[in-house]
Image (cartoon, rainbow, N blue to C red; front, side, top):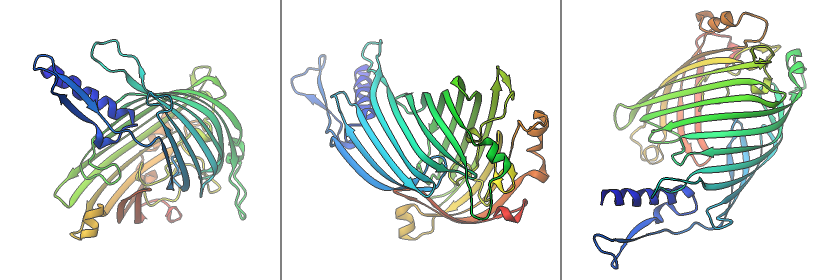
Length: 390
């Protein structure tokens, strides 16, 4: 009976992961025609509508700027849970983008008895007419294939994209020589893997639990770009009481450009480097730009680290409690550097941890979950660094 129960629960969980059934509609029915030794069991579910269209505002995945998005879904195209998703966006730093994703659930066949098929395949085409970053504009066109596990913890990808970078020009300031030299087209073919473990109690404003994410990318399977790129982040949240919680976070990344299998044998592409933008992922608040600069232009970095800690409080006000709105105080520190500027790599990496070069900030603010993502309004002040960083 225990084995039967586990099989039933696994089947219901498998149906839920397909994504075409309503979450609260999946139920197990024990039919009267069965017996104790030979039960007759049916799993019933209500299917979602085959078409879905939505519009809204969200943050761009990389630039972190606001963008208008039109989202359309066609479910269960061929009767096996397939989904076709189309997303169109336009915003502050987005000259227009189009993404078309075909999703096939239960992509991999199981050879074990009484075990359902597993894995989800995502095949996508993407186009971006120009996304603004700190010092350049990137145009992208390409394709990506991704296989992810049913528990959404493991992601395997292959992608091939054409990219073009253009210097971001302003009326009163021409682009720096570093940005001009880095502005060039490239073809990138890569394999990547992501591990994700999220046990937090809320995806946008967590108060307890643990979040761990690691990314590894290997570029150089054809194309112009060749590198190894590693990035990881971890956050731990503690609920001290019903209304008070605290959290700590650590983030790090390393980009190693290669040429003829020689590490740092060539300069990294500016659009592959790390840019510490946004408040949700890296929590380096209080700085307008971060890392190497040239004539006011951010150049990004080949390696970085960032640490953060905060304490949040939900006042005993009904609106705050109902919508999980919290006040918080925080402190951050971190640094970033380039490794292929002609200096010794070991010296450059060790210089990141020197106190005189470390960027530290403190501040306070308010944070709230919204249908468009996490909202923050903060007052932050650098403890060291230039006041121009505010």
